[in-house]
Length: 237
Image (cartoon, rainbow, N blue to C red; front, side, top):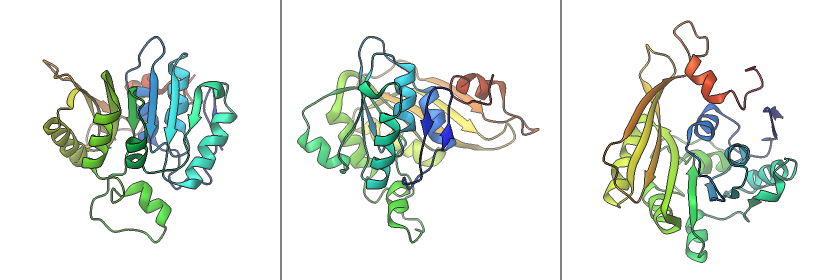
């Protein structure tokens, strides 16, 4: 059981556990006022959906995952939260099938997607599905985003630096344009390892670009990371 300030996460059945990437994305991504409809693709144990529920008090949040174990964890985590009336876990299915069968549009789509391409796989099928993009290619994910996103909505994601750059370029060719991105490194003396990014159907004049270091060179957490995650981590006052 992983304890956050306003909710708890059980991830024992989910192939992918609570990690820094999901927390970064859930804390960093923009929000919308009023009553936005949110879709969390590949929700895993549901941590990003719960962070969205905390950050947007009137959001209607829908989450989907292809893995049955992830569905079980997310369902229980949603039901045990104080926002259970605004969180909906969809029957396990590939997002491609959901997109074909669904007529709804979403104001915000968020995903911490599978990203390993043609790389070595472990012998656990569920973990491979969560980590490798064989079952959800970048091309398929971008097509689903284009189909499901409202005209004024946005997509938020996180990927390794190289894969993220490729995803942003591919999205551009499909008329989804980056308007905000943050380059993430473990420490100031390390190379960037992740990209947090937002896409929309409207081309921005300028891309809001920044960088973030998770830790200082002495391995203490950076002030920027602590400020970003202070509403969630229990170890931050």
